[in-house]
Length: 212
Image (tube, rainbow, N blue to C red; front, side, top):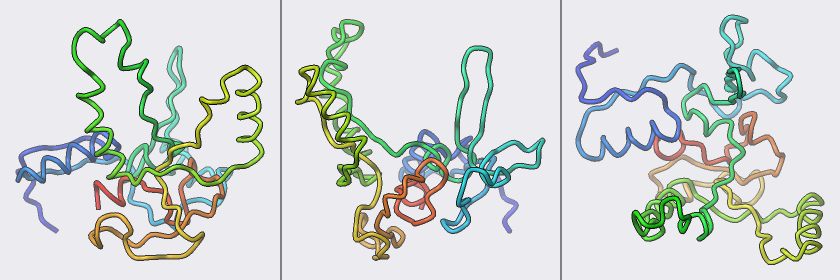
């Protein structure tokens, strides 16, 4: 194991901000080290249920070294990730682009054409994270759509944009995103376990793209 730690940049955390920064710095030719408090998880190592506290919760004082870090502050409770991939291991896997009204908010609209400035970066992130529209529609989706129609907002209902591989459920295929440069992937089983660690190699967590 190398003990040469003389590098150009040290990135703290391997979540969305850290992994993107690290990859882009490496692309520019810099040497980079990422510090991550959690471990690297294989897909089959994630807990089958969040009742398995030792694998689910990050609370070292209680000898729990899972992926969900719970931070209790005076006015807010924060759920974050612990592990290679950071918050991507535990987030709900939805990746929206803000509507036009957000870019045109009076709070900042006169500073820049934010839509034109930011959309190229949204598109790049969508490519890297394999964003696609969820193809599954269950009863909760239909209820929400009915409610939207009931208040005259039916046209605002859209399928959720998600960062997940929606190939044949459970079928493993060679990298479908980066021309073979990425890892093999398996189609989503729609099990709903995105926030407790995807055991089926379908969720596009950062260890499968930016950090791979």
